[in-house]
Amino acid sequence: MHIDPHACGVDEAGRGPIAGPVFAAAVILGRGARIPGLDDSKKLSATRRDELALAIRERAAAWAVASATVEEIDRINILQATLIAMKRAVEALAVAPTEVWVDGLHVPNVAIPARAIVGGDARVRAISAASILAKTARDAEMALLAERFPQYGFERHKGYPTREHLEALARHGPCEAYRRSFAPVRAVIEAGGMGQRGLF
Image (cartoon, rainbow, N blue to C red):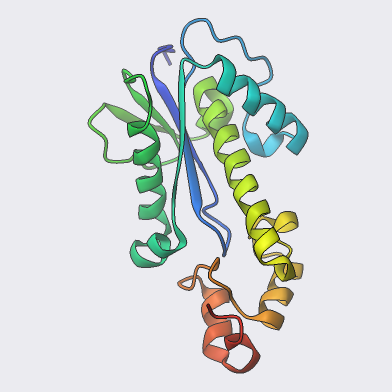
C-alpha cells in the first residue's frame, strides 16, 4: 500500500481484559520521523516499548492517546467503547491527518477517510507506533489501579483473566475497576457471598 506520511495510524490496547479502561492511540509519524524498531507492541518487551514510546512522543509529527471507561464498556459493549476511544484519539491530534489507518476489522466514526487493515500493527509503522503508545498508556493506568487495589495483582496481569487474577477476583470480589458485563466478573457477582464484598 502507498504510505502517506500524513496519515495517522490507530490501534487499541485492552479489549480482552476483564478490568480497567480500554485505550487507543493515534499517531502521525510525518515525513522525517526516524524511529527504528517499530513493531506490533505485543512482540516487544516492556522495556523496549517504553523506549519506543518516548521516541514516538518526541519525534512523531502528532500523537494522542484516549480511553473509554469501564462504565462505557459496560453500557455500550467493548467494541463500541474501543471505537469511541479511537475516535477520541484521532480527534485529539494537534495535526489533522489525511487518512486514518486502523488495525483490525473496524474503523471509528470520524470525519476523515478511514480504512481497516488486518495485521496493520505489524505492517504499517504508524499503526505500530499507535499500538505502542496505547499499550504503554494502558499499562501505566493498570499500575495506578494496582496501587489503589493491591489485592488483585493488576501490575502483573494488566487485567487479563489469568488463573492468578481469577482466583483473586473470586477471593476478593470485584472493585470499581472491573467490567461487570464480562462473564467472569458477572459470575462472581451473581454467586453472591464473598464475591459481593468488593463491590464499590
